[in-house]
Image (cartoon, rainbow, N blue to C red; front, side):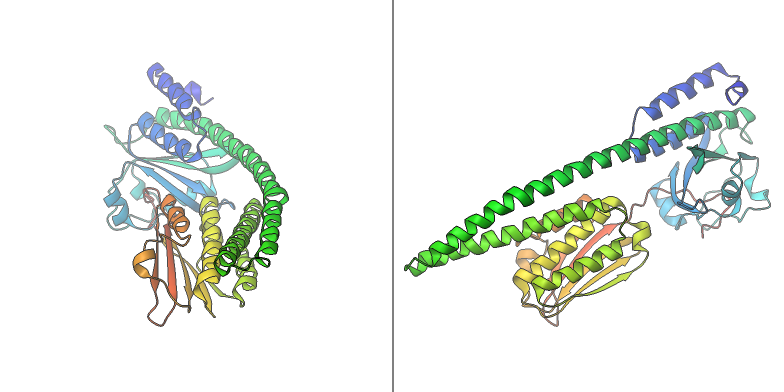
Length: 391
């Protein structure tokens, strides 16, 4: 048993306190960082990290770290994918304890700007009997290497971490089910009640317009009818969004293509779409929702205001997700809308800010406008692989 190898009663108490501390929070990002921090403290390490495996369990999809400042993380560059010593933990998920990782036969050495590390301890994390990821500790403080008891403590923590992660995943699935039910109810209410009442009101007003001889009053009523039509279109778009967001199995590329095709009815033509980069594999659910809604709102704005004959939607994935919606229409008053303020553009700016990004709109030199919406990919602090080149 792992616990039988922990002889120090103080450390055992610290371990139990750490387990209770981790399991007190069901927020996944918070759980992961708590695990890393507690492993670092319990093992007396200078650096700690967690590598989260991809769905196939063959490479590292995320790499979270504790112990490096932001400048060092930026200087190191790209995170490891799971080669070298870290790759051995993926192939053979059993604890690895080394006095000097640089002498290991599978060590790939350190990339430029990486702090020097010698002692190393790696332990797998199992979730529902499947490897979720690995804990990595480096540079034992005050000793040449991590001890057998250090290994036992971190193994015990990893076992508790697996249970905590499993609980967080279950809590998330339950929340998603509740959210889906709420969305279905809201969409049904909007369609069956709100739209029908607005439509009936619009028809009544339209009938009155034809009987009014005063041109000013008639125009005001017609403007009100047009405004109601616009509100109905927006509500229908919201209903579509609610149903679309519940379809979590659909790829973002496919969803964008479908949205672009649907916008042809309002625009009078079909926009072009370009997607550059691994969008489906890197985008988070929150980013997916805001990106799709922003594209929908941008195309709606073009249809209402731009009088364009061509629109291009471009999504580029690098260190950021960049959306550009270009049209060849009449352009905007740049002073009014440069920060996406006015004409319904404030929502797009707010969505970008919620994700740590920004939004702007500018007139194109050749005519028309370009809306640029930029949000960063989630990029937590990273500790590069002590036995990995970082590539």
